[in-house]
Length: 125
Image (cartoon, rainbow, N blue to C red; front, side, top):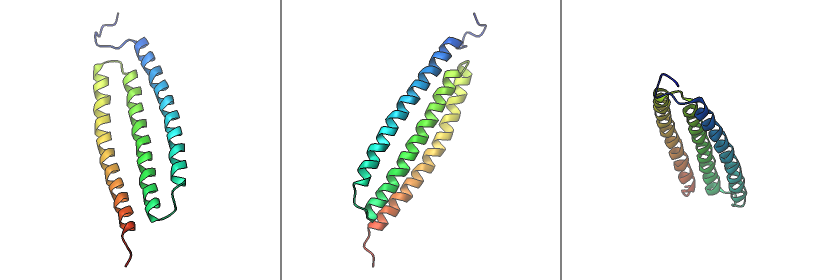
């Protein structure tokens, strides 16, 4: 028995890491299928300023979703390999800080893309 009552047993960490890997693989398959479906759908739209603005927003949002999911899986992997509660809390704190920064930057960029797309819809004088 370990001397630290809050230590997470190695077998539990191994099982958690295996589950994270399986979830990451399933999510990857889902995202691939969704990306293919969205690509097929957007290719069927007429090519004009409105659809190109929409595609830019959609592409960037998809990219951000993938980045955020990867960050969440990285956190899950870190948590799965954590040896004790202090390590878990440190990982969670770092993740929260970095993701809040990422979300703020992503929101700014999506806002800019939406604004650009809307301006392209305005009649030209």
